[in-house]
Amino acid sequence: MTRGMTMRSTQSTTKDRCGAWLLGLATIALASSVAGGPTWAYEEGTVTDGGTLSGVVKLEGAVPKPKGYNLTTLPDPFYCGRISDGEGWRILQPFNVGPGGEFREVVVYLEGIEKGKSFADKEVPQIEAKDCLFLPFTTVVRDDQSVTVVNMDPVMHDIQAYETSNLGARVLFNVPLPMNPQHPRNFKDRTEAGMYHKHMAGPPMKELVKLSKGRRIFVMQCGFHAYMESWGVAITNPYFAKTDDQGRFTLTDVPPGTYKLVIWHPYIRTTIEQTVTIGPKGTSDVTIGVPAPTGRLYANEVLDHAYTRYNVTEEAKKEIDPLLEKQAH
Image (cartoon, rainbow, N blue to C red; front, side):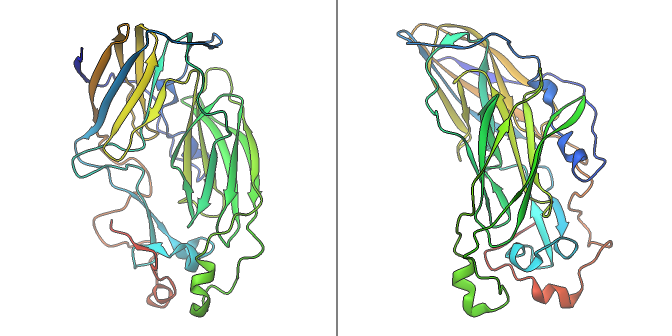
């Protein structure tokens, strides 16, 4: 039997710390929405009468404005500017939303499950630095698990990772991310365009994500290119998913019982959770409405009017060509 449920948010209070360039970034997420989870050890086993929970997540309201970065104030403006607005600015939109409000790349997971199916993916999660982006934007990891970061670009990147909560940030690791030495280096020679656009993996950097007690969120940023962000959340059981392009998710083999369903996105400032009950071999479907945050979310929000600070000169604009993607604000 399928049951329809609509989820709404419960408000949580946190501090908005938008101070220093790097540490300020790490305090943006609402770690309080996922902190203080269960402390027991999850037991893997066979589920014979498990049910299925599926649903769709939608952002309700106007999509927040993106961030804007003046490429001339950061390294490698020519290469990284291959994705830009044509005016010398790189745009980062943390909210991946479809035309019908489909909220993509949102993490959905269940809490309160002590025993159930095995973790399907035993491999170490991988994050790639590609076209001056960290991909994927959101990652799911198990606490005390390593992640592998690989540089696919012909420029140097630098990994600066922090765990975060409403109490502040703590450094997890800070290491350079070397590039593949076979990459051509003359970016302005257009005859080599096909060569330096071909991504080649540099040495993989395997780093341990070991979060402090009660913390579940970490953020990674490039120390050279501030618009490169990747966020992660640590889970305690295999009942999790990321929403697809239609904003949908499915959790299978859920042991019968009542659990807390949690929806997580690093820039949502409210706690999104719902109590769900799964019957033996039952099927439940949920429609999740996430209220869009309002107001100014970050200091470098793209403005409606022309930029008046750190303007990009006409000469610099000629050097920054959006060969891969011309971004809209």
